Structures are given as C-alpha cells and as structure tokens.
Image 1 (tube, helix red, strand yellow):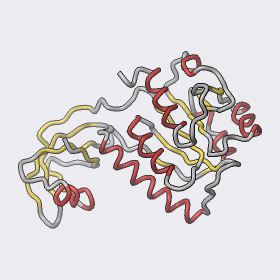
Image 2 (cartoon, helix red, strand yellow):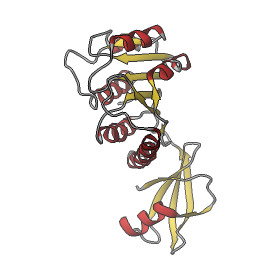
Image 3 (cartoon, helix red, strand yellow):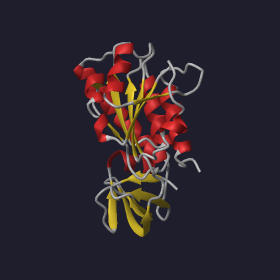
Image 4 (cartoon, helix red, strand yellow):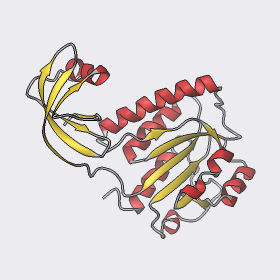
Length: 240
C-alpha cells in the first residue's frame, strides 16, 4: 500500500502539495483506492480516497493501528562527508535499513568540504531523500538529517548515547562483543575516503567510543556505513 506522512490528521484529511501531485499524477490513483498515512506518533491510518481536485486529495480514515516497523535500537549515524553524490546514496539506504538520525561530519581527510551555504543546500536535499526513503520503506518516522558538524563537536555528543562505536579500518573488537550490553541508543562513526587520522581515533576513543571492526576487508567510505547498520540490525534482532 502507498505510504505517506502527515500530521496532524483529521477524520477527513486533505493531502496537498507534492504528495497530492504524486498520488494523482504519478501513481494515477483514483477515488475509492486506499493509502496509508503515518503520523508523528507512529500510528498508521488506513485511508480511502474520497475526492481528487486541484486543491489536493481528500481521504477518509477507515482504521488505524500502531506502526511496528521501527527498530528496537535508535542508531545515529555520524557519517564522514563523501564526495559527489555518494552521501545521497548512504542516506537513502541508511533510512531503509532503520537509522534513526544522520549527522554529516567533516573530518580531516574529507575531500568534500562545502561552505556554509552549500552545506545548507545539501542538507535540504538530504532531508528530501530521507523522507522519500522513509515512505518507500514504510518507516514509522522520517529520520532526521542534521546540519554538518566537525568531529570535535560530534565527539562531545557521545555521552548522550548508551554506546558509541567507531568503525575503523585499523581493526577493533568484534561487533557482537561491543553490543553485548544491549544498548538502546547507539552512535556510529564511519570515516571518509581517506580514512581517519590517528589523532581523530584518539579523540573519539577518549570521548568514550569503542573501536570495532567490520572484518578484514577495507570497505569504501560509502559502503562502511551501510555494512555497519546492517550488522547492528542483525545483532540486535532487527532483521528477523
């Protein structure tokens, strides 16, 4: 069933803007067909299309139930900024895999170092990608994409999490060992194309991050975040 986000909702709800155009023009849906609206409380509202006009798509709520699509762990991905459109790919797939929040981080070896204005435009684009991926994968929420920050700022946020994990090509503990304490909130750090500087590894370790490995192979900067999320979801039972 086609999935959209809306809040607040009424018994008769008018969908407007891009979502309405997508329903009417791209999906070519008709009166009487069904779709799902998910609200900010992670409740699924099963709706029937009552009318399609220039103003929007009017739907009525037929039934509702709690959304059970969200993982049991809340993972924040601190992904080092990558060049080109690689970051867009990471965000799209991370949302599909169940990430809760994404923070682009500028590290010493990042090739892409956008200025403030460019970074703001990129974040707008990233948030739209996250929303579309959340609809496609029928998430209970749209994961937030935060503004660009540096690694020192990111390291100061580590006390907010049950567990901070730095995935490092230089080796570390097996992930299953790192997750033995069953953390509910996890901060994940992955590096840029050139990897982390030793000083950056020390910074995160001092701030409380535990170094973990994704195996003996060296993964690309755009592959490591997705491998990390997949492994975390597997070890926490969220791929069952």
